[in-house]
Amino acid sequence: MRRSHAAPGVAQAGPVTRADHADVRPVQVRVVVVRAGALSDGLAEGVLSEAERVRARAHRRPEDRRLSATASALVRVIAGQALGARPESVTVTRRCPACGGPHGAPFVDGAPLLSVSHGDGFAVVAACDLPVGVDVEPVGRVGVGSVAGVLLGPHEPPSDDAGLLRTWVRKEAVVKATGVGLTVPLSDVRVSAPHEPAAVVRYGPRPGLAIALADVPLGGAHLSVAVVTDRQIQVLVEDGASWVTR
Ligand SMILES: CC(C)(COP(=O)(O)OP(=O)(O)OC[C@H]1O[C@@H](n2cnc3c(N)ncnc32)[C@H](O)[C@@H]1OP(=O)(O)O)[C@@H](O)C(=O)NCCC(=O)NCCS
Image (cartoon, rainbow, N blue to C red):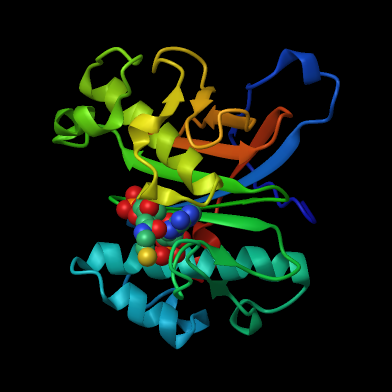
């Protein structure tokens, strides 16, 4: 991390991974959260590129448009803080690892690595010096039971909706950290049981790869963060609303 801007009232999360590396300093992950209720139309758009505006406007629901724009604005603010640059002057690139197209996780040269999740009430951006993935889903999301078949591998026991949602969020954070996204079946990523501390049990595409995983307490949502590392991670949560509502 180049900088840490912990806001007052910051929550924290952070156990995880391998006791044999407990003497090594934890990897710091910054997680910036904005709730949809803090937003109104057009607020974040001033700092966005044309491509980011187009991507935000492609969402059908107004709230999703606002959250997409907010996530893109947060990326610019966080990277700008690291670079000492104004958000609107930051160059953000996206390159899909699967097809090379201009979509996927945002990247800013010289800034921490970034991961984005938005929709259903929240916009979240995680920043870390190592490959990072973040995912957020609102508590009580309906229809979760129908994904169990694609979500769980043969060694993972069935669970109630809350457990499935927790597992879903953990696994999406993992596949974002490794950059593969849903090109890898989530059933090929094994994580700890929902009631156990978050951990990656086996990452199918590269079984030896060490990935740290943490659940982050956040009222009204499941939020998980993954980092490709064999060290512990420490998650610093910040409220980014004031950055995009001024
Ligand atoms: C990213 C993904 C795992 C989850 O998406 P989701 O739950 O619907 O939405 P979220 O809001 O949590 O995440 C979306 C963000 O993930 C990021 N993202 C997209 N692909 C990503 C990848 N391969 N790795 C890491 N992050 C990725 C983007 O930043 C995106 O937001 P943005 O476009 O507004 O910046 C899923 O949509 C996905 O895997 N997409 C890519 C699939 C792919 O690579 N297909 C081949 C295309 S050629």
